[in-house]
Image (cartoon, one colour):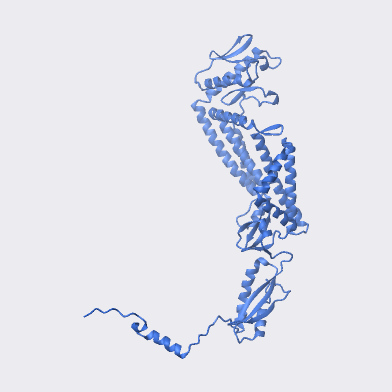
Length: 536
């Protein structure tokens, strides 16, 4: 009996099969394509048909390389769209071989166009054969039969890319299940799984993007129209992105240079964010220092490395940092005038981080807001309320407003529960009952012990206050509710009643008789105006 391979092995086999199938469907690189130019070939230009490069020509005495190929590429493209055959000939004019297309001069072969050891006539014949092959291939690719076959191949390539993408996702999820959160996980577990599997997911997304980019380029390369359009777009983007537009110091920088710099900055910031999480979760938490101190160290390390890395990137980019002196002065004036609020919050964030009046994990109360400090950054602090709502508070609020930090120094805090009992109750029994309600309850501390104070005589009750101590400030409302349940049960069991406000109304006999007379008298006697009577 043959055992079935495990699911992971089947996925691997299917992925390999799809990769092989896609590789077989991908078009081979055309033999007419010329290699990409090197740095030494910058003055040259490329002769192409339907976006496929054939060979390169160099500048002559009278014309630049771009001028030489501009007219030739236009004539070749028109000949490629013509269903009839094109006539290519090589004739000598003024001592130089000239390639003609349908009787019209196309290209003149100069000494710079031919490598050493090759005569101009031989180079002209080589170019003629390449042009004939390229024009024949262009006419063949415009036949209906070729277009139908390439459409079917394109659909197969797209379907294969879709299946391979899904298969790679399933394979990674089975091989590395710890990198993906499960449906039943809570938010903290899901966040840890997302953080652990960031690099793995990035690698998976890169593979999937590479598959789609490769398939898209292959589909575009199948059709001459799309290939020509992409080639023109590539040339236009290259010309626009490579043109300098930002002069700084002695150099001018192009759009491509700026994009590269921004990409490097984003990669640096993302890498330092990952390094901060690793430092906080993998290194600092095993040192035994407080959580707030861990956050401060990780924060300072991240921004110090970001500053140093930015300077290194600018130097590698070729920017002279001395040219930034004017920018720094302008930036300082902007901070002083237009960015006062941001500057104030920035400085407040530094004070909070280093002085640590509040730390990550503290339970704070600022105004009507109560919650746990989740994250402290340079500009603001994230506070998660008891309703699990994240509130972003500017750092200046913690220094300019009155803040109650229940966890500062020691998380131990006192709760006061006011209680009123009916007149005539035995005060010693009430005290015993209140202490008994606090016994064996894990939410309050055994030391200091609960205390009962007789506050005084109220209008309708004897007023007491129960004092208990807790070390979980964020649970204070839950603890108060639980104690109220226990107090009500204990007092009811001991027969001690909790009164409600009462008022006694005293009426004299004369006042009572007047009220009765006013309610029983006819309307005319109660002050109603008599109706006018008509004369007889």
